[in-house]
Length: 324
Image (cartoon, rainbow, N blue to C red; front, top):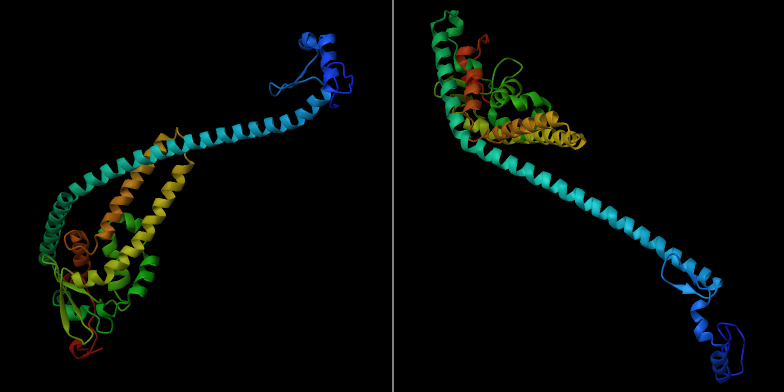
């Protein structure tokens, strides 16, 4: 539009004064509301020319699209925030349930262990009494702990890295859930008992858990409640047990994430498996605690007892003279 052009009839004048007179005479101010306006549908703006409206609409459409995009992103963020809050509430609920369960288990653990120890001791005592009254052959009755122990391999020679690798291969998920008894059997089968049938550790008094073994110099060494042996293998058992614990817990979390809200039965089964996994892991990490590993020691004593082993004597062999 020219500088002195009438916006209503589009006539051009020499100066502003003449234009002003024209506007007064033609009464354009009175007809201003009657002139056709071109309004934008996307915003309140309006124009006297269609060209100006079209030019404005290009900008306005881009702004509207941007606003729609921002609104959609905002809704997505709100939805994600809502899901995250719900997920956190579920985690908090599960955590409180786990904490309350573990607290109750730990408080009751000592009583359970004491009760089990009494049952095991009574069972072992009864079995020993029965075995002494049963007729064995003369060689089995007179067998000495020196005939059971190996002079070539000893507890002192156990290597931590080798033990860890052996237990990683040997320990299964079934052994993990079997508790300290199965762990003791695993130690007997894969660590204590050698290929020639002899052992690196044996129990000479099951009722009092007294063990004997050879040291590096060929001398007999007593190991009360197998504490020295347990100290050597305890850390390795914990490493292998922790790996199985992590695998089981990861499998529970993976399966839980795939369940729907209506899979109540499977959720209850997973919760029960979670509790059993925690109980088994607590036993594993207490394998070298003298106050909590009675089940492990009692089973080890029964397995390595010289009264329960029948090993043929090697001719012309005197273990006292064999020094490593």
